[in-house]
Image (spheres, rainbow, N blue to C red):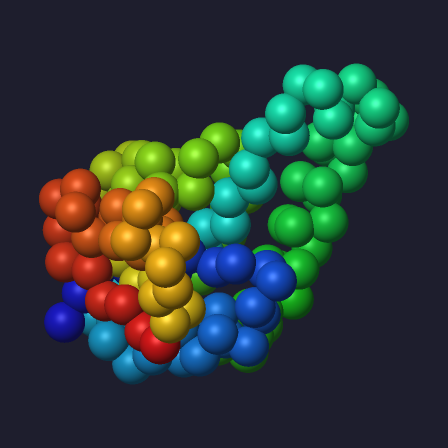
Length: 137
């Protein structure tokens, strides 16, 4: 059904990411590609000043290891992974644009009052995506 799928993964909820990955594998065309994307939000400067200077690189390396661990080496499909920095919704949309994705898959929590004022990452991705978006709860 889809040749290139972006699976947005929140590493604080790995189980949801694994469920999304399994569903993506079932929707992928033969010879297609799945790209796991995790976005590290930027740390505000006043907090970053108190942290070790290499914290950003350590966070990136740890996230890459966790994404790699989600990939079954026996899988007969092409799965890439990448860690990005910035605003989650913008980076997910940029990753989809960069690889000309046909589908973005993202998990969503049950909305609360906060989401009505600032909007969730999934809601922003849905509003601005140039391809299909599958949101899983």
